[in-house]
Length: 602
View 1 (cartoon, rainbow, N blue to C red):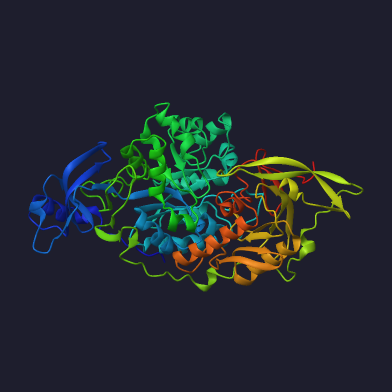
View 2: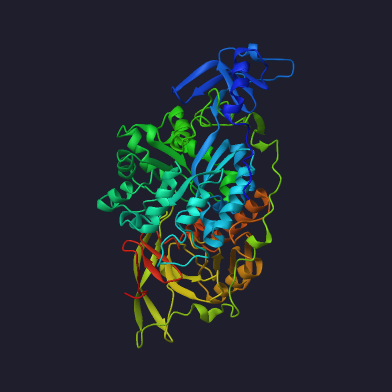
């Protein structure tokens, strides 16, 4: 049984009260005086503005709310600060923060985020529909708006990977009736949509029939026939663009271009040129984060960071704020609920002394003060996940050892030419590289001098003990070490990258002991560990603690020679078989330009 969202009464129920407050017949709960209203509807900044709030919603926005003040009305002097709508993240995955929905909210509210549109397809790949339900119910209990998109592709690429669960059109149709479901999550199987795959057609149809939004994920630079077929199939937005021409193509086809700045994805600067240089209408652009590491959330920010970055690329502050508020709300057909400071909307707003820098003095959600100067003033209690959501890392009776990662060369070979996954810093795509590697005693060796180390995927849902071995370049590890994680988008097996097979085996076994997470090992010694027992994806500790552990992991990776920005995030996507060019899965090495498995040796 799903729970009802924790939010103020519907506008239809509270409208008479809002009318009475706006006209002075009844007092407001809160009046904010003397602010500069950032009006995202008109694109103006209006000085000398007062706001009157009742029942968690704006009742009056105008020059003088004195008539709304009663004996028990709380009055706050904005002192000329900007009144900014609460920020919205149009596309994101809570699990990428290593924490639960509750802890994610605790981390981002001080940064001005008051609405999120989350796609829990990570937990869906482990626990299926029941995992989605768990996160849906937790999201609905939050004091800010956390809407959920029903995962669409579990597994993300049928035939090329095996996840821990599956999602079909019946699951999608059932979830569309849940109160906090706002649409279908990113449809990653873009070749399937373009080919009229029956499952994709049925899921999209169920979403459209429910009057909800179909999320997109077209991860190819090809803007030819497949792209046009994909758009015709129903997806309404896309966050996978990396070039200005990607954004322009999507907007011209009636989609919303979602520009992301996550912990490792830096796609705003290149695509925002569609607006700043090509003059494309900014109303069809939405800012989002997609994947944010817990350390980024706690130390650097969330949507405030994205808005600041967009402004630094040449956008006017009001335009950047529109892309992080009103545009998002309109896209999800929630303009009457959120995304602006206007009568009837949820009273989500920020007090900001410097608009371009987006420094935030106070965060209000639904008319309640939630944070001041970067700190929560109203905490959110921990949310308990059931035992069934834990102990999901199953390695089988025979645990991996060093020989599990042996790669045998073709008979009689002294060297081999191997395919190598090439990491691209700050981008989700990889490169399909090749390298000549030495052979010793019949086994293919790594080439640490040329930054080619080993990668392996260890099946963890059914305890089969299966290991897929390959090579990867880009991490720069110069020491004997291994890093393993059970967060491996999207099927979430264990992926381990290392320069030493004994360390690789030890790292994988350690994750089995703690029920999942991320660990760095060097010469038999554990350097850092982030335990994530909830589905092997999320910690059950507070966000601040997780961020500290994550920072220790990042520092350990640096000590081993890795200089990549947020290398953990790059690591966790090496199994994402829906983004080109070369990936690893439990089926084998996958060429994502052709959507087929390929041999390790050329």
